[in-house]
Length: 462
Image (cartoon, rainbow, N blue to C red; front, side):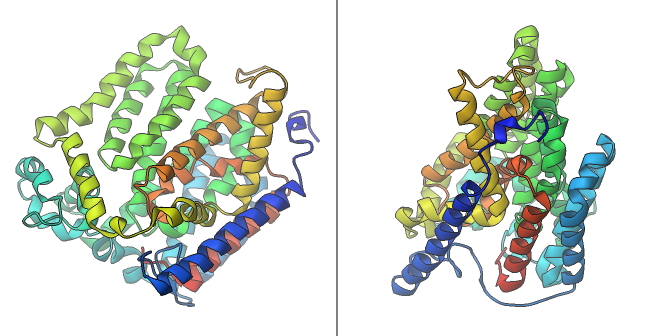
């Protein structure tokens, strides 16, 4: 045991085993009760509760690559992450996450696994021809949100602010047309999210914690859905907003602050629910409060950057608040009006177990133990240099902020089902909990096996 790990004494098995067992029971209950509810009243409106999908054992062209990446990261990931120069580690993490995501998606083949889902399930590409006059479409956007409105938007277009659809419109305008390019965009940009989280963890909690977390961010079961949905792209934008904010408050950089604000503003115009990233942003400001106190002028470019996207869309005629009000009405006009809150408020957490893996469950237990132990010693000790456990405490605090944001989303009732993709942006901030684990190769193998089983036994529907 090194001098940096005393906070973890007493946090090993059987505690990890109990946490994992509880998570397995939660998922099992969600499956069995969900299947019963779906068979009796069909109120869940998903094919394989608690996930959207159906039972469909299969292999495909991506299977050998997925297995190869999984074995490589599980066997060598911790050692490579510990030894590579930092910038090389970031590049390697992005490349490996991209390979992992692409290989899992290609288990279903290129057309079904990557391209077609953005049109048949996410519908953004179906409406591109309605955006020939972008300013006029933005002015008229809210008039087509409700189901009973003329020429109503498809569900996913109506369910997001227009920056989501506008992204694919702009890709089409610059010549990157069609399903294939849209899929490549979502995978390659989405894979950068792990890099953003690593950057934030390093500057806020130390390089050792970031290096230990890296293999868990790369080999996340969440990649099953990162490669087949636009939510992977949303997750990356939100993650970089947090990472730049962390760089701003620790480096006292006005430019990083402006960039962070710009991305936070864009995040809110990609998905209404990602306004909850304010919770994670607040945690970053708290962890970097010394830098904020020493240079409060950071708030000027931060807030100015935050205003850019909202001002641009408002000037173009889009009313975010009115659109959100109409979205809530549309939400309950559709499946959410039928899906029972009493089931999904806890079954959503079972989905979170499936996208973050059992290693994250054990890591969260250890992170909670770090915070409780530190609190028992007379405070959270979030400042660098306050005792040998300072970095562990800071990392645990950041993970806790991600968990809090996810729980608020859960309790809101605006996330009934489909959280295996909707909560991808929040789930990424739980994965650094893997840094608290020992015997990381075994835990990484468990993560890989879960992802491979999900991808090969189910047609996930996204």
